[in-house]
Length: 319
Length: 277
Ligand SMILES: Nc1ncnc2c1ncn2[C@@H]1O[C@H](COP(=O)(O)OP(=O)(O)OP(=O)(O)O)[C@@H](O)[C@H]1O
Ligand code: SF4
Ligand SMILES: [Mg+2]
Image 1: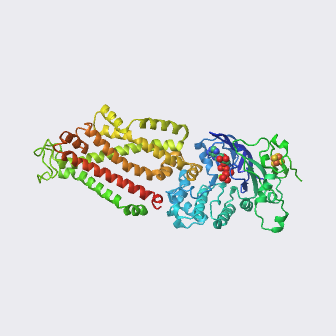
Image 2: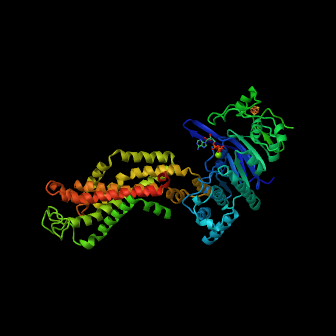
Image 3: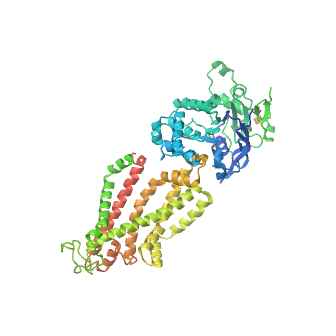
């Protein structure tokens, strides 16, 4: 494998709040290779967005390292960070909140180019037109304001903005969850086309396993601030090993009735515990169907059970 | 913008306000043309009742000064002081509120402490104190009114910035690598402007009233004649010649009313969601 475009190591993001320390991300390590799509799944509140935003350096991580193209960016100041920003961009969840309502679409797309001093005004105009075309917006759209567009079109604008600086990796934080079901597939297909044409890598965040399954090369499963399983898409889909992943898979509707009957239903009981006070030992133990008392004592590390397949559970064995 | 004008034009009261304001502005602009001489000149016999003499339609005061000349020139002074003082207050309030709301944390705490400190003193009393200390002049009056009226602007701007800065488009600016100044001025402020403009139009009214109050108490600029100056002079003859106070009083009342109507109209036109219930 070529050297990773993004490499997170023991990354942690804790928020001090009045109620105590929120351990939203608590020691996450993962590499993303150039051109690769890594899916990140987990329940609402498990820390996916925080992980994405921390990797994006929207906040300064509490601990750990973020290496972008081999360079440590976790402790860079905002001005030192600026040149690195172009390699790493983000598509936000809510296309209604992620576009400045006062700016025309053309201006929104031009802003990154202006900030990075790219090209003359004429060159920037060409680039903006090219971007619009790339995401399937008509040139007339550039003169209009965001409120004149539907959610799906707005998300195309958000994607075009993320592409303006020719990034190598785009973090997509639930890019279709806020959209009508009818346009989700179009936006996902657009993202896949762009990946192929431009050689992008994605960190694709979603709580919807079936979406992630569709787009990802590899999938990472997150629970309460930590990764519990990482595997390539096929492996994770056919042989999930961590009891939490199995529970998530059981919740995904299956089209093939034969397979559905075959599958042992494992249902998640109870709610996600608070990241203010995560359970001792294995964080999943309060909801784990196969937990034993020892699970409270030791925090299971992610260990390789097969090549490229990592699981953080002491009670499952590889083949 | 077109939508905004259409919504504003539908509001009859606001249009009425605009008309009154245009009249006041016309008075101010015409003052040097129609009354080229100083409004302080004694040009008529004293206590001329309005309508008694064609040459002085609004009559004269106890010194024989033409009240019409006073109203025309006073419009100039009152408008200029009201507008400039408001601009001063907006400049200070928006800057402080924007910084507090955008950065949050200890910056916000410190700036809001200062703002509260300014708000604990009643505005009019504070203005009296400031003008008395610095000697009454147009400049000191403008600065005093600006000083006492920025805190509400700062609080308003701060609360707008607080909600806006957590919006994803601001985060998108940061991921692009944009500097704070550009984010604040180009991306957040334009989205916070609507309520600030509304407040600004109401503040002009308050500033005109405050100036009139100061002039009434004898704290007006002795070199210029504002509506408040005329009222202050008429105070002593309130029983015998009430029109000397009533005429500038009505001018102030109408102007303040007009500004309020315009402010409300702007508010409704800028926030259509609230209106179309
Ligand atoms: N700035 C913050 N201050 C305090 N707590 C925070 C902050 N940001 C996130 N959190 C907390 O961290 C936890 C993880 O939040 P996060 O938004 O990353 O979850 P998520 O997996 O993206 O969930 P969702 O699917 O709902 O988007 C939550 O408990 C949240 O309340
Ligand atoms: S370590 Fe124990 S509690 Fe955790 S997932 Fe494995 S069996 Fe369940
Ligand atoms: Mg999220």
